[in-house]
Amino acid sequence: MKPVNIVLGRFQPYTKGHQACVDAAFDEVGLKTVLCIIETPDNKVDERHPFPTSMIIPWIEKMMHGGSHIQDYVLIKNADIAKIADALHNKGYELASWTCGTDRYPDYSRQCKGYWEKVGLPEEPKCIEVKRGDDDVSATKAREALKNNDEKAYDKLLTPEWRGSTFTQFRHQLLKVMEDAGNQNRYGKMKPLFECIMEAFNPLKPGVYKFSKGTIEIDTKKSEVIFSRIMGSETLEYHIPLEDVTKVVQAYLSKNKSNTSIQHDNCGIIYQPLPNTVSIWDSKTSKFSFEFSAHELQNIVKK
Image 1: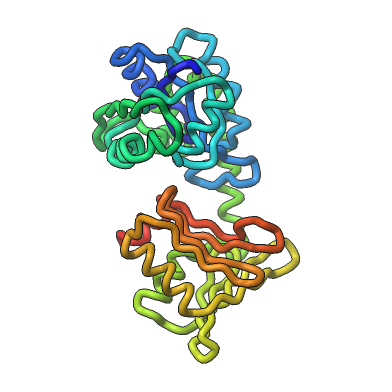
Image 2: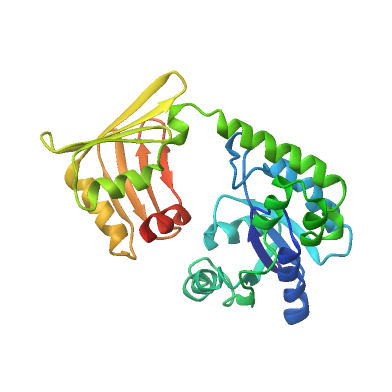
């Protein structure tokens, strides 16, 4: 296996900040970087992630051949170190270091320190912090420049390979996503699912809570919670005992370090501390019908 550094992100778009992480690894440990791209499917774009992965990859490949210290890229679902290690192994790479900005350093360094043996790495990866503050380069500022039709500001934030033609292409895509968001149906403007759960359970308040794709109904008379999700022309319903949903919410609030999984005949509710998600599992389809990200959960708790 070839030892490599990794830089993780959706690259919406790829900025000088991302490249600073790549360069820092090469300068500090002499390793080239494999970009771990968190996938954004074409049908899952939104205003924070307007560029599908299929749009990002051609520009990443261009950089790989331009002497940028980028070795390769892999596609991943989230920041779980076990899944990252597997994706790297499948392409003949070994995770040896992980470069990130100040905001991500506590989480990524914890994963490197706590899980390297469990995922079969020969030694603990070195987590390299690239100091950053509020005034530094960010993908958010690049998207703002696109919104404002400010090509000069956009170019200052990006590496040379991304300047020029990407401005028109990416601005067109961003405006299209913003227009689609403005035309969403009544569900599109509802609150995120887990925010509704937290409102309902902290403290417990019976009632119906609407979210982006359906509803949560807290029925204290029947002592159950009904999760309803809109799927095309049909609505899926999951009836879970009130006590079980409460246990999972409490596990999240207490920052339980082990999985809390409660199964029923046709569904289950699961809390996973790594990668910090709460999910509703459909036994018939063997798929998660609802899944809430760590980022979403953390934002909700701050409110």
